[in-house]
Image (cartoon, rainbow, N blue to C red; front, side, top):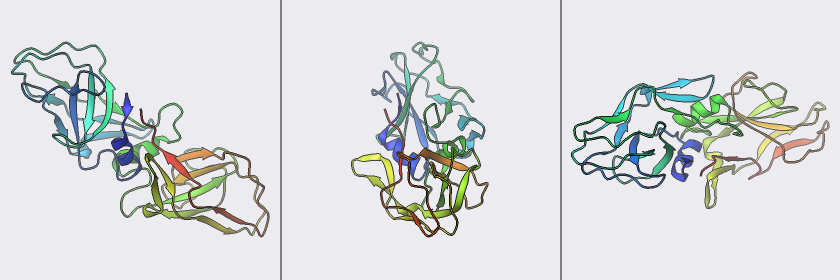
Length: 253
């Protein structure tokens, strides 16, 4: 259960909410109940009706999402799924329902209560920060069509506002990221990220981060430790991440 490829592509670029998401009732993690008789998808097209929890990276639904009253007796839904369209479309995300709800009878209401759904992408082991998870919903990790993010390097793991930063951040446009072949849930820099000739002797660099802005205390959205220990950059060295060096992956199930 969890994020699907179509959802991951939106998380990376453009935002999971996109132009709207539609809740579906499912009998298992891949089978949707038919719309006929009951369980037609319920739209949540107003992203302002999802409240962000900046501390934990959650988004919580502010409105109840109720399915139509059944006109036929169907099975009990065990999973909920989000799609990108009212009908057909792409499955974005699935999760099992808690409490083992029974099949609703004729004339009974069924759905999700307000504030009963919490979604986030910065769980245990994730390289996203809470702020990165928030933006993954609204505009994408690397942003929308006109967004610029910033890359910074650090001598130790950065905190939420970029501690241990060395050198100035370097801007990187949304267009400077490309999906990785058939692994479309991953994106890489398609152009070099150049910090220029070093005028001072920097300490060993151990972490790279993607930042929301250029300021020294700008929010860290994503961070990763270097795969190996690079040489200590000396005065006169050029510090550059070559093309395809930085990879950001939205984990899918």
